Length: 131
Image 1 (cartoon, rainbow, N blue to C red):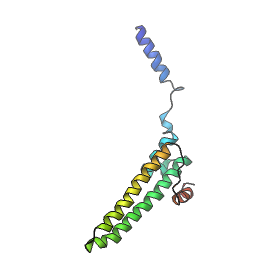
Image 2 (cartoon, one colour):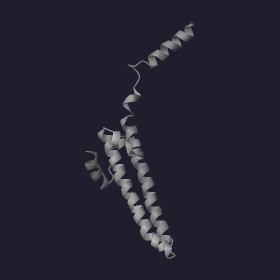
Image 3 (tube, rainbow, N blue to C red):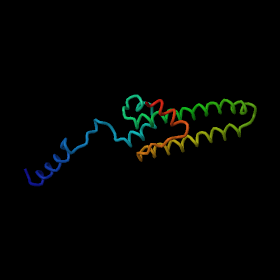
Image 4 (tube, rainbow, N blue to C red):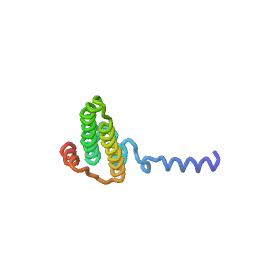
């Protein structure tokens, strides 16, 4: 075996040694798990860490409420569309959806930064769900 091969093998064995390698079986770090908690319900069901459970519960409360609001606005202004009006329907839904997207991005960035960002009203409900 050549010296280059031996050195390369020694470096690789040191890099992949169990003592120096972080195991991925333990799951993602807190900030990555917090970011991912805004993408679905599964992290609430399998997550045991309080940080992740809080962000998942807050995501469910905030975006569930905004979704219900969007449906209600669609129902109320949908009648106006049937009567010939279109402006209220499109502006109301556009505004709710724009707020939802901006809030979703802000929450994910804050969770990734490790900050426990609390959306007013929703955070208190999320605390009661997560605990």
